[in-house]
Length: 336
Picture: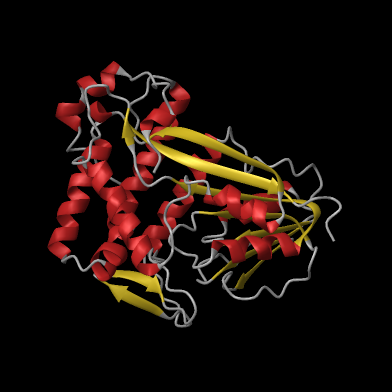
């Protein structure tokens, strides 16, 4: 897990936010989408009012309804801000010609990349058809399961991108081998994942074994073990799998982010506000299937867990922080 000790530099808090916490913490209005998907071509399961992709090959734990898709686009906003308004960190150059986005979700990253590189062919794949129909002319989406054998040409892509696939992949070494096989020599891949455990920048808050942040991370670790699909990416496995696949120049960057608008710094405050909104919309969707269906918790138990987590995350006195891991690596130029 990502421990706060890995990120010792504390973010300076905005004292006015903490001063207002008692009066505004529980009363702030929240933005919540009420739209729903209605297309007859979609085959979804419904659990406690949320919809989930029904796939014969991969059972994904997160919802794919309008509420979660809204959160996904908000996440894209703060992830881009986190990387200094960049869509990627890998040094792919100024003229990539073929770009693949694995697990594209709403397709927002692929759309932005297609706009950034209008001469490139951009492809986004996902098991769920939740992408828009109006897209840049150099972008295509297709329904595809990355866990199956890839049918793309070998040595084809200049850049392959994946993010937020925790709990979704049975065999990461195999996936990395497929990425390697279908990248051009000299091409790059980038993989972004969040850490399970959040922390506190308030020295008076002890994130110990009984804290909700620790319990939350332990629950998802248990889910990952039960389904055989990890939620943990800070254990060196990404670098190990990339090296075994044949990649070189393997790079790991860790980002510490505020999880609400408690920092004093204007940029971090804005970033934290978007993360806060993302978490508020997403929390119940995160747990309904994995904690309810896989671990067997009742709806009442799930609701109590979410309420406790939401309180801890949003209380500015906790100065909640999260940790995001970004990995990128290159296929050797002399690869066959």
